Image 1: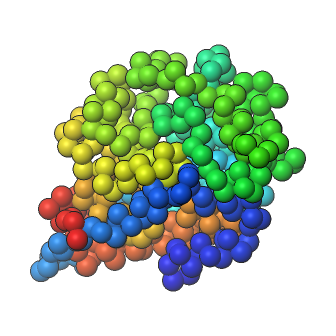
Image 2: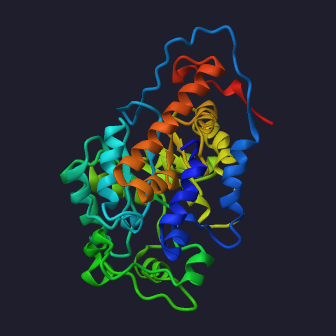
Image 3: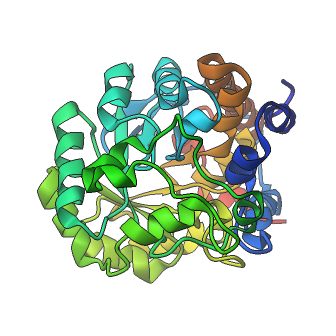
Length: 359
């Protein structure tokens, strides 16, 4: 593997068409999907010289938890579509590499079974269901088994119009279930059949997700779980401030990987506004289109505490299971290490805002 794009092509060859389309696709014309990637390339680095970079340290903390490098595994759904070991392989690889995994509500493995396999810290990503009792159950279960934070996704009151999924008739094969959805009733653990108007996932989310979510729900999630809450799906400074004012410990600048509102602002472009608006009041994370170590450096320079990557670990999972995920994470770590050396940064704290400019 020379770069992650090589692995992407290998993963596509490995997976069935509908599953690949689900992981790879965006919404509508996939403008935001492409722009998330392109926006990082349009940023340039004003590197430093004559700095002793003979020894470099990449570790940092996220919500008080140490990670060995500032790359976290983003929440991605239904990982057994990529490999039979699914979320279990993903969480083992994350721990072995010294970082953490954010486990999806829409996982094909229960939150308890993922945590039982974990060798490092974990956070739990939450969709708020219409059934608040079911949502409460998920939060209490996550707290009970040792998740350290809740990542509340707020950009999905409805599912984006994902044309690949509709065209491919995407649904889960019969042997897989959305394990955590049992909390909302056993009938929700399997995706409905797709038809010409909607994918199975569209129907599932329409039945479950609560479109009435407001900032006040952040405090409710924190109260029920007793855990710090990160709000994911933020692209505006004022929304970030509202989230923190209602109890969030931080935010994730994210447009859902280009899978919700198409032509939404790229995360690289949105990040500085969010960082400036919060002015250090809370931790800021970012995902979307990050494929190289230099992208990580640019994100840190713009004020992110760490980045989250979603699709690349799935590519590794599809190609070689747990070892493939570990290879992806180690590749990003090595690329970041080299980028820091060439930029005159011996520690992640040395990566500053003045180093990153529009090309």
